[in-house]
Image (cartoon, rainbow, N blue to C red; front, side, top):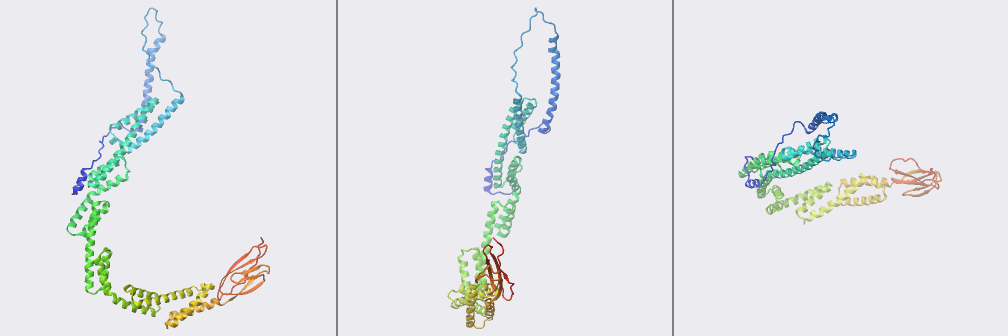
Amino acid sequence: MTDVQQDPDQRLYEEAIEPVRPGFKTVAEPAGTPAQRRQRRPTALLAAGLLGVLVFAAAFVFFALPRWVAPETPASVTPPAPAAPEAPPKPELSEEELRALRERAESLLADLLTQQQRLTARSASSWAGEEWSRYEALSRQGDDAYLAEDLEAAIDAYSDALALGNELLARSDSIADAALAAGRRAIEAGNSELAIEQFDLVLAIEPDHAEARAGRERAEKLPEVLDLVRRAGDLVSQGRYDEAAEAYRAALEIDREWPAAKRGLEDVERRIADARYEALMSRGLQALADERYDDASEAFEAALAMRPQSAEARDGLLQAEQGAKLDEIALAEARALAFERRELWQQAIAQYENALAADATLAFAHAGLERARARADLDAKLANLIDNPSLLFRDDVLRDAERLLAEARETLAAAGEQPRLAGQIERLDELVRIAKTPITVQLVSDGRTEVTLYRVGRLGAFLTREVELRPGNYTVIGSRDGYRDVRQTFTVLPGRELDPIRVICTETI
């Protein structure tokens, strides 16, 4: 048990912990591994067999041979008393029956070896006590019977050993589960030594048990965690909240699940937040008194971010906004008009919106916002057509561009000097003129192919033909009975000479 002071609740909780102690007992094993012992048995058996042969030979010489060579017994001699009847011999088994028994015994032996490996991996010899000795004795009994060709006895011994091994495996699971639960409770009670003892028991049974390994690591670090939590509590009592928070965080870095450290850190952070909130409110109120409205707003907004439901912080922010309102409105109007004169419409819109955010009833801001938005929309449309002149190749876009030019000229006449707008009108007018100017395109055919030019119409059959086309994309199709249709797409561009377009059906169907 660690010497770190525990909470009373932890001591009471620890008293309720019932540790798992399964009564360890170490059983002495014969020299060598089970496999080595089994390897030595055939040699011993062979020696025993040779000895048996010698004994049998001696018995034959002393008992059976004299009977064969002795003279016949006279009739007057009284015969010896008859011997007691022998037990009936076991019925001889057929080769098939012997083979079946041997296969059964070998199958049980294979299962038993696998089971022994599992029990050895779970350190059964350290906790199974006398039953482990009986388990090994049954295994040896089965081996001896198998080597003596007493297959039925071997099967009985192997079966009994397997049944006992299954009981031991089930018991190991029960011991591990109980020890794991006791280890958890010991950690919760702050008893690192008891927790380590219980987790070690689990690991002795299941060396790769992840939770037990993690629990043991946690228990090893528990004294340091408890010391940090105690030191943090002392710092809180001294009002040194920042240092206490660091101590709690250090404890949580070691054990992020320790509840006392979690609760302590939450409490300290709440106290720190309260002190910061009070400091922000004091700074905001002082800024209001000094008519430093921006500083006051910043302080009150920070206070509201910490406590969104704070009525006093919201009232302070409202006072700061009202104090700065008149200055903001005048400044916004002056800036918006300056942006309009420079034809910076998005910036002008932002100023008018700021003014309306301060006071939604400002007439100048409503009128200016409507005017700036209309000019921004016109500016964007003109810039889009100028930056993408190929859009004018479409008839509908070309018509829209002509209407847009008329609107722009009216706006320029009403606004007076507007250099950017005047330049946009001049450039778009030139692009519209170019897009409306037709260009001569020569089509070549064979006089038998019917030619159709999309956006123009049916041209019929011819050898050569010239058509006047505005800049844009065109598709020409040729058709002829018995031949596959041909299709060709071409683009007419201003200032660029186009090679003759051949439209002739040549592939028969």
